[in-house]
Length: 469
Image (cartoon, rainbow, N blue to C red):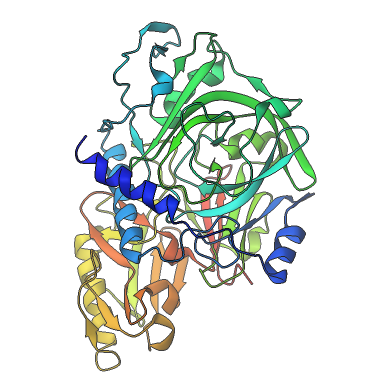
C-alpha cells in the first residue's frame, strides 16, 4: 500500500492541475462536425492525438515525456504478463464490490466477497498513449469523449451518481436516469458471463442481482460499475442494445475522457457488437500531436489501397492482434541479424503503446544502423529513460535515414523521420524503439499517418501510406 500512495497522490495532483478544456479552433470544429457520420460504407469517426491542440479531452499541456514513457512501460509489463498467462493482481480494490457476490466461472453467484479486498487483474495502461474520439449514448443521445484502445474489449464510461469516485472529464457525466432506453444487465445474462474474457477479472453480483464489471489497467487505473445496455450513436447512426460498463468507481490517469472504447477481438467489444450491421473490420489513421485529426472507421474499406499481412494465430490471447515481423532495413540495407530473430517473440500491433518494442538482437542492430547513418549529421545526446539512442535536435530538423519494417505476406511500413524518432523535449530526439525480452509490440509512433485496417473477417491487417491526408 505504501508503494501505491505516491502514485495515487501523483495522479490526484495531476488531475487537480489539469489544464482547462481548450477552445477548439474553427478548423478543429469543422473536422469534428463534418466527419462523424454513418453511410453505406460504414461508420466514420474523428480521431485525436491525446496531446493534439484539437483534442476535446487533452492531457495536461505540461505532462513530461517521462510520464508517457512510465505509463508506456506499465502497458508493456501488463501485456507481457498477460501473454505469459501470469496475471498479477492489484492490491487496489473498489468499495463498490464490498459485500457483493463474486461470480464463479460457471456464472453462478458464490459466497460473499471479502469486505477488505477484491483484487483486480491489471489490464493495459491507458489514456497517456491512447487516441480519443466521441461516442453518443442514451435516448436522447449525449456525446462523450472516449479513449480508443485495440488492446481492450469492454467499452465503459463514467456514470452518475458516481457512487464511489469519478475522475474529472470533459462535459457532463452520463446519467442513466435521463435515458429512455437504459437498462441494467442481470447476473444471469450471457453477457455477464463474458466479462471474465473481456476484462480478465471475474464479474460480481449486486444485492439486486445486477452484474458488476471490473476493468483494471497496468498503471493502477481502474473502472468498476454495472454492466448496462443502451442505445449507442455516432452522428446520424444509432445502434440499440449496446452492452457497456456504467462506471461508479473510476480512478487513474484517463485524461479528461469519459471512458474507453474497446476494439479487441471479443464479443463485448464495440467492433463485435456493431459487426452484424457494419461488418468485422475497422480502420484508422493515427494523427501526430500537431495534426488536427485522423479517423476511425468501422465497416467496409477500399481493399486495393493496402498491402496486407496475415493476422498471426496465437493461443496466448485470442483478443489481441498478432502479426509476424519478417525484416527491417535502414537506408535500404537489411539489418545484420538472422531472419529467425524477428520471429523470436510473439508480436502484436497496438494502438495504445507509444514506443515499439523489438527483440533485443533486432533492436541492437537497428540502433547501431541508425546511429551510423546519422553519424556527423547530429550530435549524440544522453540516454532518456528507456530510450538509449538519442540525438541533439528534433526529428523534423534532422536528416533521418528511412527505416522499413517488413511483415509476412509482403506488407511494409516505410517509416518517415517522425515514425523513426520521437522528440522527448525541446532539444532532444530519440529512436522510438526499445528492446524487450517479453512481447514485441508495433506501437503507435510507427503507425502515425498510415491508414491501418484490421480485417477480422479475412484475418488480415493492411497498411497504406498517407492515411490522414
